[in-house]
Image (cartoon, rainbow, N blue to C red; front, side):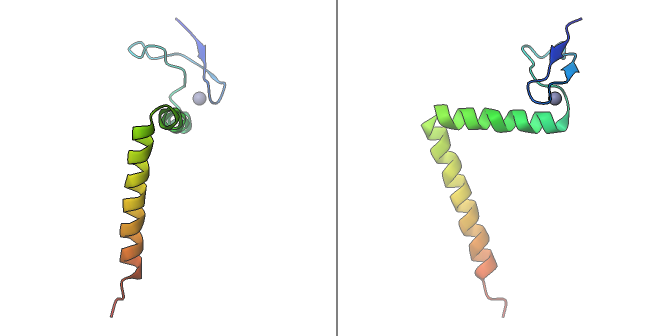
Amino acid sequence: MTIRKCLICRKLFTPHRHVKHQQTCSDPECQRERRRRWQQAKRKADKTYAARQRKHTDAWLTAASTKACKPTA
Ligand SMILES: [Zn+2]
């Protein structure tokens, strides 16, 4: 059995048999952080992805602020 050290919390864990090159443990916090790091790397490497993400966020912010500013009366 292989034992690895989690990249994020540094705890030792046993990787899932079906997940190759697993570098983080199954802790939800570590999973979240792993995803965050992956997205950060992806954004840095892929300009199209970054632009698309930004567009998404802008659209969401615009929609949210429009809704918030709408007079109720
Ligand atoms: Zn961990």
